[in-house]
Image (spheres, rainbow, N blue to C red):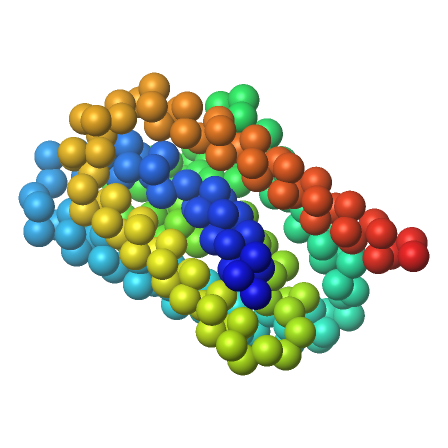
Length: 206
């Protein structure tokens, strides 16, 4: 169980990318008051937690209802996570995060907590796929389920802490440091995504 929890933690922390979210948050809240920054941080994390919990607890039901096999979902989830990993490694403009039209909309919004912070940055497609993939293929086990939910909470708490400390983290790491972390995380995510695909293919053709 410890191995499962550790694997899920690494996968989720890599997909959410809380460190690389710091410069984005700093730019979106540039010139805003500390009260506004704290409010947006807490609200974004709470909304993200609600969305991820919904997908976690309803993941198995969703897969069964749609008639999707576990192996098919492993392959599809692995492919999507691999594409996200490529964007991270090669520092490409992410199509899984925010489009140019959405960026324009963000500039006109006073509340950035739900969009784009909660979705698509924190509880984005990669995080939702990771949660669905983990909980949707989970055998009935109350202790493991609670452990996985605790991992989600831990990742969100870490994200909140980094958002609250964004100015300090930004000064220490800088843009280059954030990019280095993102690229290293992308390599790890790519390997995990390939493993998901291998497991799915083995199950499908066994």
